[in-house]
Image 1 (cartoon, rainbow, N blue to C red):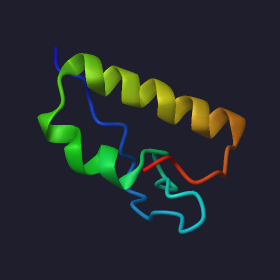
Image 2: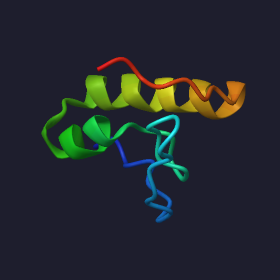
Image 3: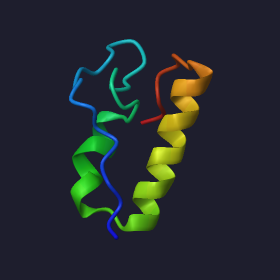
Length: 62
């Protein structure tokens, strides 16, 4: 079964953190989603969950 996108339809990137205010992915992660393997998608979801839970607001590394 394919990995489902964590998108919740609140697609606004926070200018300070660079994370989507809905799913906590970066713009690069969102843009690359369709071409990612299921393993990569699972890793992105795990990172996004950590961001949401910890409330991190730092700018992601480029």
